[in-house]
Length: 231
Image 1 (cartoon, rainbow, N blue to C red):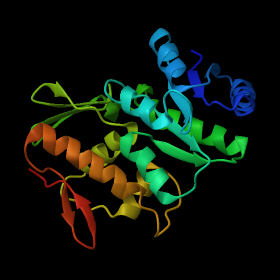
Image 2: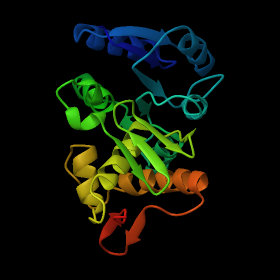
Image 3: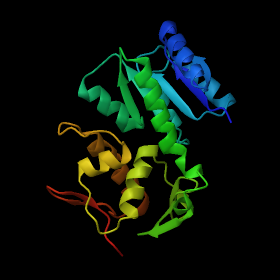
Image 4: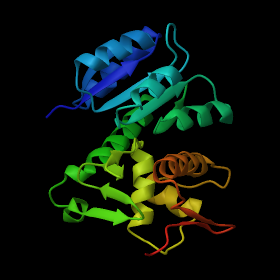
């Protein structure tokens, strides 16, 4: 099956460049040039990943991501000409799974797309039998096979990386994971001490879980890391 990717940017040259590189890798690419157009196209097609710029007319990338995250877990790669940490944090906070600053190397973009797709959909690999299990823990039902988390039979909307963080902790109950451990396991990249990506995702994840459950499930071991207690 050919994976469908939606590319959203008001810069047509960038969209066309991304289009060329992704189609060369075997992806089916759809284009949108503003936020409202992106939402309209998204409603008509089934997509496996979205690449979206932040600063656009009619609807910003942040607004589009916020709208999509209400009902969808699709991986999202955010683009922006801004490199300040606060812009990256804002993108990650509303639900982006990864962030790439312009100007970027198209080959790096392709690599990140493949990594996001692999992480988000790897549970479909028939050889990964362990992903078929459903974990019950502290009022949560974590289904790796279909990538869902429920509390009292109510679906909790998590991003792909939030799910992976929760799954790592839930399948290693009682074990403490540092930010570096989690970053290397979930992002599969080298960790830098100034990287606050895990902190942002962890904050969002804990807020969603505590709102749904009414109690804390992920504990912070100050100066060490995070864990879920073994029941």
